[in-house]
Image (cartoon, rainbow, N blue to C red; front, side):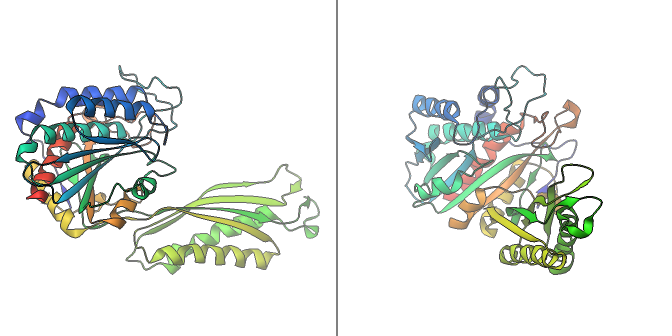
Length: 399
């Protein structure tokens, strides 16, 4: 479900959180200036630690290398326990924005909004700590490294961050939705992320004498075509899946028949039951084409992240909170699903939870470039809205 804005849409944000807006922007821009890759977020972690320590919030650091967990216990009771997750890492992209807070690190930028996620989580921690006398339950705020790769969620889970956690929530600022909107649904929100790399082994030779060869380029081309039949003919049309070949490398000269070809691609799906069939079918197709054309192959298949699947009850809670924050009519649209992936999925496999999208695009301010674009940026108004939604989720869940 998505709660969509109108021109006159209104955000119900309490004054105490609105007063944090300038701090939220300052923290976010400080992080944006100094982006760091996965498991190298030392400066980011230190900024988080400095804030938590200054406020007196208990925390643990150096979890899964650079992860930080803040612990806020309400004075009205220690249970239930709700976790909030925020990822910290940036991307190896050269920023093209001409802004005062432009990345100062050559070749790196926060091109996905994780700097905003950290700022929202810090604002949530501060507010909850200041109001802990009225809080029943415990909130764990998990600052996670390496979402963009190689994946920091599993190492943090293995370190015990979900012990005694009853549920978990998280958000992603989302430039695919306009400012003043929230995309949330029970069930699959984001897709599994898997990759394959295949080397076709043929027999090279002179371009004028193809009968003496096994043309790896030709075999590879047939493999690419055949792979496109898998979703069309092996996946239920009511399910969604993608098999994309993104790389094809073969040949060295115009008159030489290639002896090898390299093919790489990605696989995406929502339905976990496809997780076994798709890699099996991919290898069957490759093996069949190679056998028919006299080639051999080597296949490496890698499962990165499973699908992000929200618990229906927690999704309903988030939706009810969003409807109370954003005064607009609600409607169901497909845009709150994406074939993009997220390692929040690992947390959701362990405890009930909900990951949701917080609309952040504002075309009027030229803040609508897509995620992972060198000119990505978002409307920072969304920061206080994110804090308000998180705080209301905590209040509703713990009560």
